[in-house]
Image (cartoon, rainbow, N blue to C red):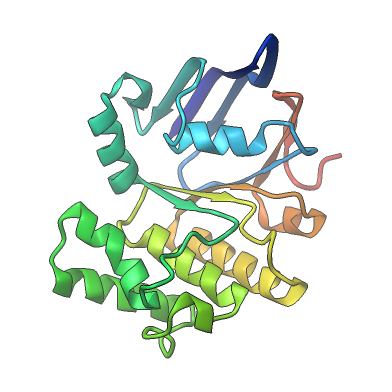
Length: 228
């Protein structure tokens, strides 16, 4: 479903060359829940940014559902990202002046759905993430865990083939983190949703089908969570 080949990302700061990714190759199957781990600076978030078409790579290839996404124009990549990829940030990235419902509806409207259909989808998803009674609340009126669940609903509203999550529990306490991870597991299991998640928490390992560990921009090891 997803194939990354020899992916590289090089940043230059003056005379210094930083290889954030240095030839990463991996595949992700439809419906798989894959965790990306590794020390700080290993390239985890960079990998998600490139796969999510938020940043161009310095080299290599990315194929999603048979589409060479790097061969698309900027406008085509934007449309592909809107229709095929859901992205969840660790800081929630909600619009502060919009209610929970409006935050979730926003991507659906950008896709061209009518307000009624967008609201129906949003209400269904907010109910699924346990926030049916909080639809008219602003982000500031909600806890961190609730805000992240809104972000999950927003990422799903356009029915993406791939859900990307960049340390979605980094700003949450233990209880809220477990609730959000249980939500991801439920979405993966019940909807067959493909999920690629960056995590630095050992307790998250049990949720993943497979773990890819990065170090210094390369794949250091790859295997099932129970493997050393």
